[in-house]
Structure formats: C-alpha cells, structure tokens
Length: 408
Image (cartoon, rainbow, N blue to C red; front, side, top):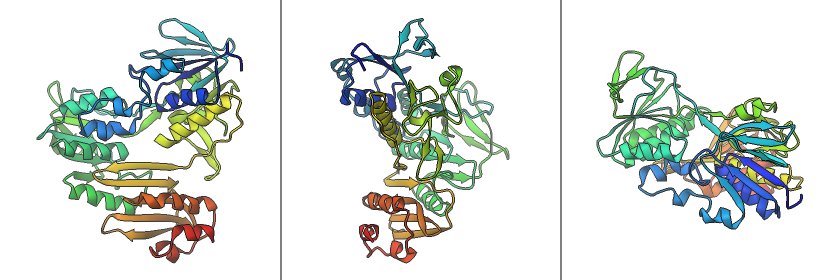
C-alpha cells in the first residue's frame, strides 16, 4: 500500500482506537482518518459503570492514549464528527458537514447504542443510560448519600451500576424482568449466588419485575410497577442491552444480520471494507456458529486483527470468548458460551466466594465461570479449547492441578 493511500476508521471508540494503533504498528505509512461522534479521544468503556462512576476522577485514566499521541503518529482524529454515507463505487465517506474523504480501505467500528425502554416517563429528567462518558458524568453528579436510585436491568451494566451507586451512598433497588440475573451469561445456580451477594450488600433486588411507567412532575419521582406499587426514586438507570449500529453499513448495501456480517478476517461483503467490535458478526470456530460479541477483549483484539489484515496480513481471528464483570468487591470472569450444558461442576470455596464453575456437555467443557479466582481462568481456557472430555470429579477436586489435566 502506497504512502498516498488512505485508511478510514468510522467509530473512535476502543475498537477504532486500537485499530489505528495496530495499523501504524504493522508498518502502514499512509493516511489514517479516525472519525468519532463523541468529543473525546478513544477510551475504554468498562470503567464507565465502575471506577468512573463510583469515584471522582476524569476520563484520563480510561483514555487509550494521551491526545498528543494521535498527532505524533499522524492519525487524523476527527471528533464530534458524524459519517452520513459510504459510496462504495467511488470509495468515499461523506460527513455531516458535507466533507467527502476518499478511502482505499475502510474499517467500521461503529459499535452499538443503548436499547431504550418503551414505557411512559422514560424521557423524564433523572433517567439515565450508560454508554459514554457524558452519561457517567451526568449520573455521577446525581448520586450522593441518601439518593434513591432504581436500576432497571439485572445484567452486567445494571449490577455494576448498582454496586457503584451504593459506594456513593445511594440506596439502590434493582428491577429485573426475568427470574434471574445475567440470564444470557451464567447458569441459574451461579446467578442465584450473585443475587445473594447483592442482597447481602444492601441492594433491594426484585426479580420477575414488571414495570408500567416512570412518573414525576418534570423529573423522576417514582417507578410504578405493573401491580400498582410505586417505588420512590430520585434517579433511574436503565440497562437492558445494546443495539448494533448497522445503519450506515446497511445503507451502503453491505450484508447485515444482527450486526455487520464479516468473514474470519474481518472483511465485509465488500473486500475493501472491514468491521470489528460490538457491531461485527463473525464466525467462531469454537462454537461452530456466528457470534456478535459485546466485550472489551473482543473489541480490542478483533479490531487489531482486522487492521493487520487491512495492511496486507492474512490472519484468521478467533476470539478467546473471555468476559469479566466487577460487582462490589467480586470479580466474575467468563469464557465460552453457556447455553447448552448438561452438567455443572463446582470447584473451590463457594461459601467463601472464591470458586470456579465448569459447564459440561457430553463431558466436554463449553464454558467456565470464575469468581474471585481469576488465576484459574487461563488453565480453564486451555481445558475448554482442548475439546477433550474430563472427569467431573477431577475438575471439582482443588487438589488436582488444572494444568496437569490440560497436559494429560
């Protein structure tokens, strides 16, 4: 690729920022234009519901690089910029201000947006979603000792937010529509352990909660349940999932199906356009099907792999299927896809809060959870990726070294 070529990245989040870095590291010397709708340089999003919410620090610790880094590496960082169209025939991107930029290759890291809750009152002052730093700043300013916070959604974002709100002195009610927490990610038995944790720490956790409306005179005052009960609230935080931002790709005629469809090299249906991060739907060899993954690690690693391939590499990307969540002082790590197990094997001190859970199907490990036991995650991943069958008793025995099992 000549020095006169241009790579455009649409989406200046974590994936976009790491992709730009990977392009330079791969030796690409052409023009890189990184387009982002926010007013901040690329930053990590996991701290939004944790450190940046419960503490009082700014965005500096979460930024991928000091702002000067982009100039030093000749990366054109376009902030507060919105890409409105991709013309594949002329290979151009048009911005909202009318500027048109030609590209040789294009990477879409457009991410996702929050799923909105369609109930009356969801637009009142005091209702928050958490997807960017402005969201976190706005919510943090409202959380103080004595604040009554209601969190709608018992997934990672909701539970991390609940824990952070407690640290800031708020009282917290969590409302989850299903009968368990983190329903798409962990087994009911593990979810029950986490429900006990949150209740023990002071969260008023309600499962099977049906919400009718949010009410207030110009601002949030209460959440009204379907049975008529009213829960007093000063702030409401909604965390019910995200929706991939595929509209730009779809309008350009790219294949879209629960995200932008890419191959194992990150290429879309147009060989000059790649996609990565929360928006990309990529084949996964371990599961044997396509997955659109919403995780920090995938956003980073998938974007870097796509960037290297744009620079002439030939790298089939395979995600490690690793995700984590910090809730209160508990670290939960997950690998694999926990959706079709026939046996759960527990290992370690469950009562003391330091253990692992293996999800077995026909004797093979398809997923693992570790709780305050991250040191065992890597050997657990090796066992899972091996595709071997294991004796449940050996997995459960803390005296049996996991690395020994991996070598057998």
